Image (cartoon, rainbow, N blue to C red; front, side, top):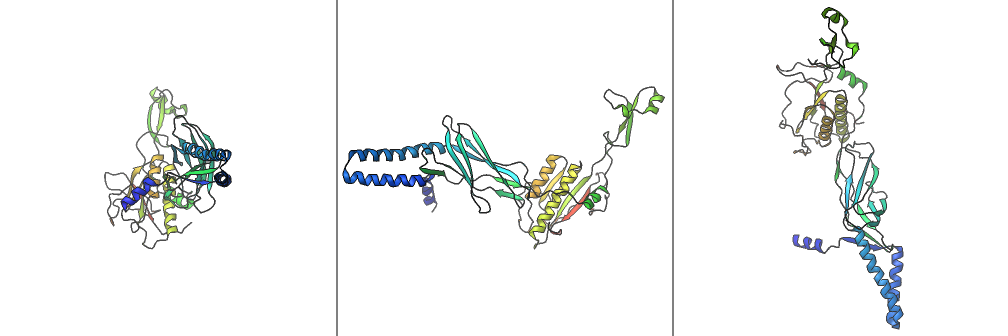
Amino acid sequence: MGRFFRWWRMLRPPRTIRPTKEGWWFLFATLGLGFAAINTGNNLLYLLLSMLLGTIVVSGILSEQCLKRLRLYRAAPREIFAGTPAAVGCLLYNSKRLLASYSLIVELPAPTGGALRRFFAPKLDAGQQRLFSWEETFPRRGRHQLPAARVMTRFPFGLFLKATHPITLDEVLVFPAVRPLAPEDVRDLGGSGGEREPRPGRGTDLYNLREYRWGDDPRLIHWKSTAKSGAVMVRELEAEAALRVRLVLEDPPPAVDADRLEADVSWAASLAAHLIGQGSQVELTGTGLFVPLGTGPAQLRRILEALALYEPPHLNPLPPSPYLSPLGRGEKVRGVRVGKGEGVASAPSGTPSLREIRIPLGARRAA
């Protein structure tokens, strides 16, 4: 059976071709002229028949040259969120060195079974590329496969429509939906506070007094110390501490509703985006999932990627996420255990305090 499929792939033509409406009339005229030439033996009819057949051959050669060495790539933004329209597309590239391609049509099926999407490029020079984009809304997070595309042409005479076989585009990773937090959630986060870091910064509390250096803000001059010491002294402020938060995804029940699960994952993503936007350090952990403590846009992207690839343990025993947790199945997170709104608990000696927010998946109401 394997040998049969190998032979089938070798013998399978690389293109599909079908006549257009004008092409059918052209074929009927050629066929009728051929019968007339055979029955009458007229040399003029044979000459006309050879011209028509030569036109078909030339059309096949030129259309094949147009489709030869064309490349189709996926084009999508770095961040796509579930439920939010995003501009995705495909990039058509002519990798030929000298010859251009003409009258190109890129056809993609609609994901909902509607009308086909068609994009037209009248000419694509050698080494040139053309971007075709459209708006797509992905209802859920995770990996999504873009529809396979075909490249077609009617060049040169419009008699035949020659097309490539469907070209599979790369997958896109869709992040969970990120929405603004409710006011009560923001109040719970702000009430816990965080540790003050013993370093200078742009806070409000006094950190130290030192001599004035060029470039210091004159508004920070401490006049009493300046009068006592005889040197210009300025106030150095203490940096405001950011929250250090651990988000813990608790395993959902086996019969969890898919919409509730998506709502909870979306809430976890929204919480991480809010905390990191406020300058906090955030860690994400759960069964088979671990993103170490960090801050900034790169940390937010790592958390969103991990949440996009997350699957409940009973549905996916071996998570495909690259953010694998050192915790085993059923093993609990050790360290600080603080529920939502309970404040900051004391950490073990020698380690900084870390607030923990546990997110029971499948417990929230679907949005």
